[in-house]
Image (tube, rainbow, N blue to C red; front, side, top):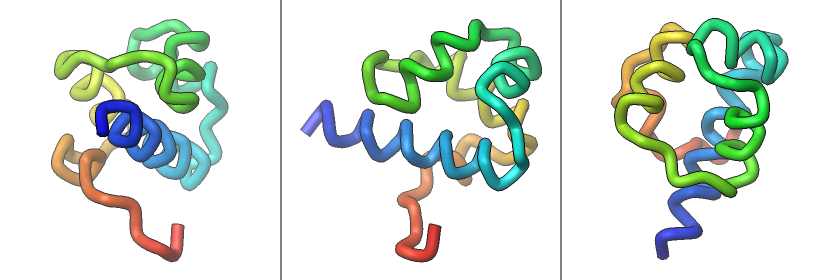
Length: 75
């Protein structure tokens, strides 16, 4: 179960990042995180903290709730 939620969250971050035509580097810069950390999140290799979820949501200019929503089938 734990690994599955990380995969879904990582995919959600990637989808939102690509919708905005952001590179991992650009998202990392806007969120004050390292590019490799963004990649690890997207590949479900890191268990992200609430603080970093907030940073990523702010960088994507969406709410935390929106970022945590299940991805729709159309994404």
